[in-house]
Amino acid sequence: MTIQLTRRYSFAAAHRLHIPRLGEEENRRIYGKCNNPYGHGHNYVLEVTVSGPVDPATGMVAHLGELDHFVEREVLEAFDHKNLNEEIAAFRERVPTTENLCIEIYNRLRSFPAARLARVRLEETSLNTFEYSGETDGSPS
Image (cartoon, rainbow, N blue to C red; front, side, top):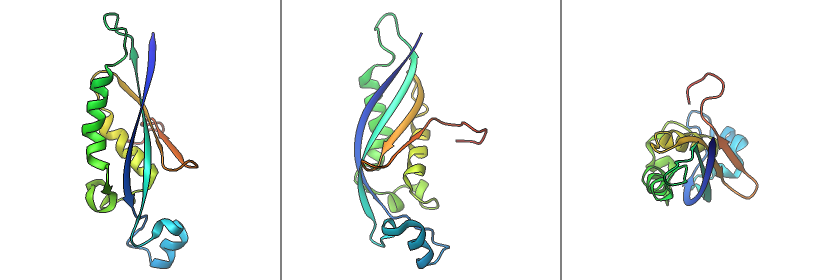
């Protein structure tokens, strides 16, 4: 029997959606107000879902304290109150869209040892939510 456990976290971060090789006008056309030269911020809500068998001794898929510590170390400490473009190496050459942020978070969490990472879901605004479950089309995640 496999059970899924989903835990919610939150963090705040700023970013600017911008491709340096494109002109200012083209960036504004593609990214609109998200291309603000000074950046803009979001209060992200992150859902992390792990799955696995229920441990007969504990009755749990994963110990919540272990999951919380892992997410804190791998994601929250790294991203909370940061400028993604300037402070996160993964986004120095890649546009920090929420799609790319979702993939980056998944890759940071997939080594959680106590259960299999099933997916991450990232809410950017009340209107925009992104979900990633790893490799699905044969391409690397």
